[in-house]
Image (cartoon, rainbow, N blue to C red; front, side, top):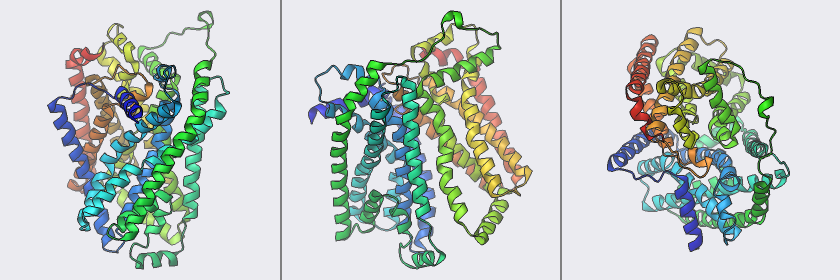
Length: 543
C-alpha cells in the first residue's frame, strides 16, 4: 500500500506544475473559486427553488450526477490513453521491480484525483446549497462527501477498461499515432452509442409525465435510471435520514471498492504486454527524405500558422487534447437536445419555436446563446498552451526575425479558428429549430461571438506567457494537469457574469450589442497594447 501511495504521489506531482505558490496567488485562487462557486450557487438556487414548488427537488440531484458522469467519462477518454500508454514516465517505470498492478493502480489514482478537482469546482457548491435549502442534517453532507469520493471510480474504471481492451487489439498496428486516434474514436463511439440508446429508451407518454409530476420526486426516475451508480447516489441523499439511505450508500461504497479492485486486476493482466509492445514498435510513419521535400515561398503569417497546426496534428496527444474537444463537445451535448426535439409533438414544437423566436430578439436571449458558445470556448486549450507545448523549443521564438508581438498574434489564430466550430454549430442548430429567426439577430450574435473569441484567445496567450509549463514528462500534463487551465475557466466564468449582467442591464437589444461590443473592443485593444509594451518582460520566462 505504501508503494502505491508513494508512486501515486510521484506521478501526480510530476504531472502538475510544482512551482511554489505565493500567498498572493493563493488568495487569487480562493477569490476565483468563490466567484465560480457563487455563479454555480446562483443557478442552482434558481433551479432548486423552482423544483421545490412542484415537489420535484430531488430531480436537481439527478441532473447534477448525470452531467458529472458524462463529463467524467468524456474527460477520462482523453486522459486514460495518454496516462497509461503514451506518457514518458513509462520508460522509467518498466525497468523497475514494481508489480504491474501497482503501476496501474497509481495511474488510475491520478485519473481519479483529477476528477476530484473537477467535482470540487462544479458539484460541491451545488450540493451544499441543496442541503441548506432543504434544511438537511449533518448526515446529508457526510453522505454527499462519501458519494463524491466514490462516484468518479465508476466512469474512470469503465473507460480505462474499454481503452485498455481496445489497445490490446490495436497494438498490431505499427503506427503509434494511428493507434491513439483509433482508440479514442472507438471509445467515443461506444460512449455516444450508450447515450443514444439511453435517450431513446427514456421517452415517456404525457400521461406518465403527469403522474410523475403529481408524485413527489416522481420525475427523478427519468434521471436515476441513466446509470446504476446515479440511482444509488441519489437514493442515498434523498433518504439520508432513514435506513434506505444508509443501505444505498453502503452498496455504493462496496460497489466502488469492488469495481476499483477488479478493474485494476483486469487492466494489469493485459497492460504490461500492451505497453511493452507499443514501446518496442515505436512510431513507424512514412517520412520524406530531404531530397524529396519541396519548398514553396509563402507569407510569414501563413507559414507560422501552418507550423502551429502541423505541430498540433503531428502529436496525437495535443491533437486529442486541444483540437478534438472543440469539435466533439458541441456534438456530444447537442445529441440529447436534438433527440428530445424529435420526440416532441407538433403542439410542443410550435410553442418552443414561438418562445425561441421571441427570446432571440431580446438581450437576454442573445446573452444565453453567447453563454452556450463561450462554454464551448472553455474546451479549447490551443492558445492557453501555445507556449507550453513548445517545451524547450519555445526559446526559439526569441531568435527568429519576427517581432514577439506578431508571434503572439500568429499563435492565437489556430485557437480562434477552432472556436468557429461551436459558433457555427450553434447557429446552424438554432436555424434548424427556428428557420424564421431574423437575420439581424444572427448578425448580432456572430459579431459578439467573434469579438469574445478574439479577446479570450488574447487573454489565454498572456496566461501561458505569465506561467509557462515548459518542464513536463508527458504531453498529457501540458493540458489536463496545468494550472493555466484553472485561469482559463476562471476568466470565462467571469465573462459569464458580465455577459448576463449586461443582458439584464440593457433590455434594448441594440444597446446591449453596442455595450458588449465596445467592452470587448476596448478589452482587445488593451490586451494588444499590454503585450506590445511588455513583450520582453512577458517572454522572460521562456527559456
